[in-house]
Amino acid sequence: MLCFNIITIFPEYFREVFDFGIVRRARAAGLVEITAHDLREWTSDRHRTVDDRPFGGGDGMILKPAPLFEAVVALTGANEAREVAGTGTRVVLLTPQGRVFDQRVAEELAAVNQIVMICGRYEGVDERVVEALVTDELSIGDYVLSGGEPAAVVVVDAVVRLLPGALGSETSAVNESFSDGLLDYPHYTRPPEFRGLRVPDILLGGHHAEIARWRRRAALKKTQRNRPDLLERAALSDDERKWLEKGE
Ligand code: SAM
Image (cartoon, rainbow, N blue to C red; front, side, top):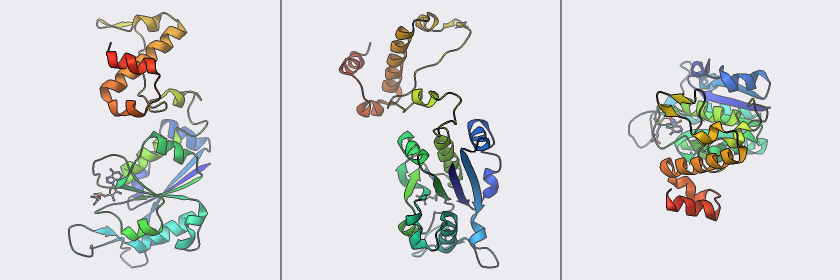
């Protein structure tokens, strides 16, 4: 079982977000446990203070190191901060300064048992948390959110659907976008004609090899149109590369 422990100043944010679809089923089946913890549980002053002003001046507030150190030590089961690394727990900080979260990182995280995630707020967290505790700084894209909570939801969702048994069909994740370095092929359902728009004839014919070939080419074309950067790294045959260059 994979355990996510999420550290946040807004635990209510997660109250229902994991109660739907695949993530809900995976929780019910005991494949994953997801708990949101209030960072203020690890404060010791009367006001339960989690933030303070930045050294050196400037705008905004910074999440203080002490509550975060306490929280990570407690949630990893370590006795003290320098033992955290030895627990093998992945300590993920959601931050726009991280490496970009993608399907490869999701696959990597789906293979571990314990993940602690830190959601930043305000201007972010004291850098000593990164230096001493964090194993992975992850960004969900090149834009700035107001907090790490929506990013944590994205990471949990993408990782959970990769856990063996989480999807209805074991093969579904294998055919999805990014699994083979390309975007998914286009999908159609009934009716075969809708407002004058027809489903490609080949998909109606039941010829499996032809359908597979059409889908592969459609995936190549869509990737070339929307994400040409992916084609540079994708495993394509020489024929496929030539076919794309011809632009048929
Ligand atoms: N001062 C930070 C900077 O410029 O890099 C931005 C802080 S942001 C307003 C507050 C928090 O939102 C961050 O600490 C982080 O946890 C989260 N966050 C913002 N954008 C994110 C992104 N693209 N991916 C993951 N987390 C993000």
